[in-house]
Length: 421
Ligand code: NAI
Image 1 (cartoon, rainbow, N blue to C red):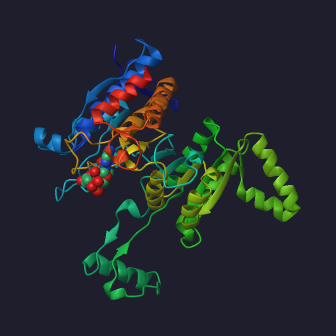
Image 2: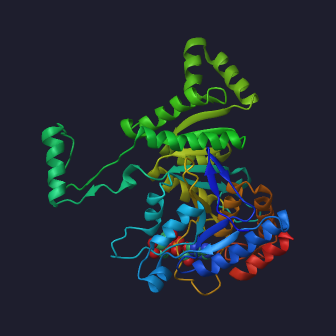
């Protein structure tokens, strides 16, 4: 009997046949959704036989929704994600001039999905621009609701921009606006609550998965009260709420100051040996270099919205690009989660069978992990790696691989399913 997933006392209660709402998506959405559901179903069947299965329930959004209902994001779709808690979506075309800034943003805001989680791992055989891609195993926690992305902007010349400028100059004593007459303005809200809940999710994830470190990535050297505060709130959280399970770089520096380098290093080594998660920080520009040069030094990454946007794409490119890069938007306090392909609708290849369904398949595997169905997720990862290592790939990877065999979207899914069995 199919049932909805529940969330009680901070835990997901997952029935054997949970209903999973899905949005097919625009452009290549139909092809990759069909392919990924077949792979996920095969992995669940291989892991649990007839005892467990996902019950897919289509809900409408995007172009298909507009054609069928006259609405890009019908209320029933939002209700379904609220009722069933965990869902998945293909890419959605952003309607131009329809009064909705972005359907993705609307979904994230309605369900307050404050974590954008992007795991970055390399699969053997996938072409990579870096020398040791096998050392990459990073998990990005990007804050999803605040920062410059909140969309508080005033265009130069408008009444609001003039009012805002005058307020800054006359009432706040701001004298640093270089060209006040022609400036547009953007506001960057970063709250303690918003920062702490994001960093807390990252630290808990590292503890649960026995990962070695959390790097707080920020530009606090310049933006002291927003990004700098983000870092400090992160350290405060780790030292107060996770004292037994973490050791922070800030604590290291205090010990070094009081007792010297050797003592500080000894405490750090002992923390590592006892399995504590090391909490450190890194300035964003340095991190973009660091992640290329020493990817193995970074495991979980907690960062603000805009930094997370840049970092996600760079790290995805290091392991094969957006065609195979999965993602999820999650609220760990309510259980709501939407897993998603991270790329767009790829209108240039829609309907040609060229699309790589890898991103949505791996997002499905993340969904399985979120439900606690780890065995099924492992089947997906193993079969995918086997398929890549045999160089049987879709056209995006085919053009970068010597001696590869070109497969269509659907044939690629069939190949993975064969490898699952
Ligand atoms: P895009 O990601 O759709 O395409 C960029 C390039 O990557 C294209 O050459 C495309 O063919 C290729 N590509 C993307 N996914 C692929 C896959 N699975 N397999 C093989 N090749 C793939 O980005 P673009 O062109 O900027 O956006 C197109 C539309 O998608 C826009 O309407 C945009 O708003 C929307 N979009 C939606 C997103 C979402 O729903 N999460 C994210 C990004 C864009």
